[in-house]
Length: 171
Image (cartoon, rainbow, N blue to C red; front, side, top):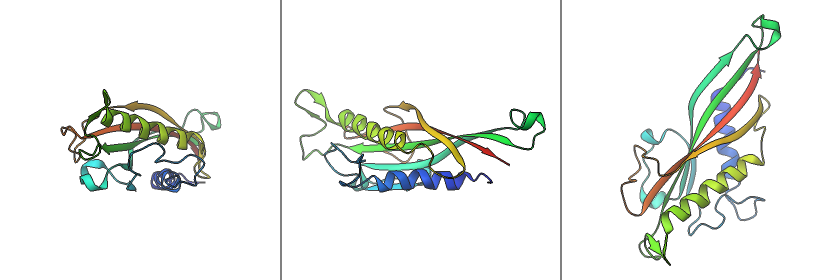
């Protein structure tokens, strides 16, 4: 089956959006002060987020590697495709709900770590995504990411990027 980056990106977004409900086995918004407002596809620089849309999750393609030599005895008939996606997690601590710091800890960071942990948990429980993906896994998380389109210099807003690797074999 042919590989399509946009299809895999859409599957990632769909898995996360479906998990954004209290009845989900792994609720994307579990333990957050406010439920995730949007789960969409798009590069953060092209999809600025307003504070009323936070917490938010954006899924975007980062890079793709293809290797024809590893499969099919070097004949190049099949290829291994490894694609990396970014899952932007953006949060805001409300100044009306205790502010940026509360009870001696950083509320913004606490919310950010909770959201990224929820994203990782949801993705670990759906490793295939689609018929073309052999597996996917969260690879790493960059906390306190400076993201164009997100006002992360604010005391109340912070962002992280979870990098997800998806591997496929295609003709």
